[in-house]
Length: 183
Length: 260
Image 1 (tube, chains in turn purple, red):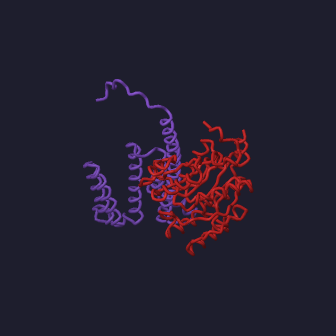
Image 2 (image 1 turned 45 degrees about the vertical axis):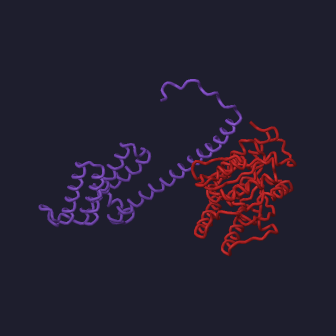
């Protein structure tokens, strides 16, 4: 748990540093350190009784969902990702956020349904969504590959046809003057 | 657009109605002799080499030997390359397309054998089979086991005996050309395309043909990919059976359009 949080914080800080955003990097580092302190029970004011295992988990999952939402929306904002692909990521983030905010409600409902514990439920939900996302990607990849193949086929046929047309027609007379905008 | 001889439908002057399609990926060594051989046997036969984004001078060699070249800008694999060739042949109005492999395994002199079988059986696609012929077949033990299994499975899928499921020596008529331009499997297409054909009502037949040893290059299916090949093909065959027959691509529909 402690190692995981450390890794999370350092990855966040590293990514922010790579983007040369000092403000974001220091915020990430600060948040990471605070999270590590909190999880290791060193924070003053919070006794060990308050910080149960489940509460720690809620904090981590909440942070995870927050990161996922921010990353997905930021990628859309930078036009690195299309909205249709971001939708699944945002949905995943929202569901995980629901688990972090209302663990008891979700837990009671889930336990009635399947008898799963909180941790198991979170793992299952994350896993299911990751499966969905990768499945979605496989389909999209196949579609993109089909499109590329169709374009390549048409291009190859057109190129050969162009060659034949060029051979059949006499070469155009050279233009007397160059257009004014060419050096 | 269509050459005048393209639609008279007599197989006697087949060389003027046919095109040889040669998919080639890095075959500059063997392609030249093969093209010369085709020209020597059948001087008036059109030839198109589909260059599947080779790294060597395949396209230049093909042009130098008088072949048309369909130059693919990215590697599509054998299925994508063949579909390019079929679409080209169909758009040019050729009545028959003969597929030869660029490595020289398929002797061009055997092409009339394929036509003879097509004339006898009326099939839309004729496969040159090395196991029906008298030629020597050199094959490793595991490969022949794999071919045996595939042959059994494919024979079941096609409801007819297929002895050489992986043969790329094929003769395709105009109706099947139109079908293949619309749909053709991407990876390892030979067995699956036969299953697709029979499922859509097209006729398939085999002709005995003597193969040669490859004249250069190496098989696209190595030891490591053979297992992957088998799995892919078996899965494709099973999934195809579960797919509904597409009435727009059925033989009746396309043959009707062809006659019009």
